[in-house]
Amino acid sequence: VITFEQVTGGYGPYLYSINNGQTFLSKLDFTKISPGTYDLWIQDANGCEFHKTLNVPKAPDPAVNLVPQLSIDLGDSLQLEAVLPPGYPLALIDTVIWTPLIGLTFESNSIPDLLTPTAKPFKPTEYKVTVISGDGCEASDRVLIRVDNEPHIYIPNAFSPWDEDGENDVVYIFADNNQVRLIKSFQIFDRWGEQVFIQQNFLPNDPANGWNGRLRGKLLIPAVFVYYAEIELVDGRTLLYKGDITIVK
Image (cartoon, rainbow, N blue to C red; front, side, top):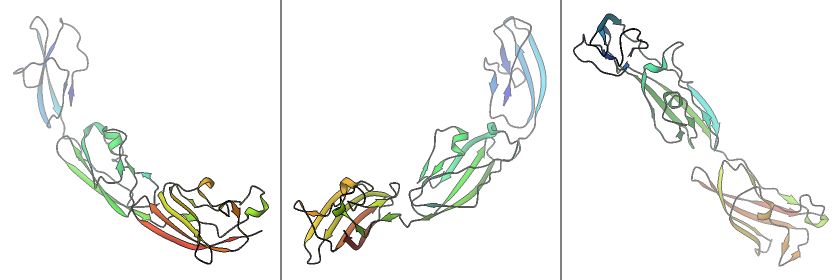
């Protein structure tokens, strides 16, 4: 970049040239300049001119570094940071390219934000970043994000609705909301196979979507029941959970 920052003397408006006065323009900034020697001219409103020779050195080649490997739980996210060399001018970077784009979000299209996306992959993913300087030089690096896809889901195996103490009176599904998209169904059966409870298409961690131990308004006696829960995760998988639930006094 060649920038005419300040002009004193003469009479404005001023015109500027970086090609030995062959072409005069009113703009102050000339971008994407190749290395070399330039004859700079300033011309005022009366045609008076000032001349100076300027050498533009070759810009340093870009480089970029990423942490080689990171780990997250399913549904979590983290911020990636493509690090440029210390002191490398950010203004020299013209383009930042990430591949693949799936699982990445950017605050804006500015170069600083393009260098620091938020990553939320649902499966192990290797991301590649390529930075390209204004003169077309490139540098790349990669990061592998490992994803623990085992969801954090808990269904209690006992509850005590008989004491009516306001604690543990309802059995319901606990889960990480970042990992579960939907609980498709939660069914409970007695030992004879009769369905005593069903709830469908709801989110976890809500007692209102649990079983209070009653069937047709009557509190059932202490016994062992069987549950089935069909749970859809954020990565598109649907898992089936089954086990025992005991009503205790």
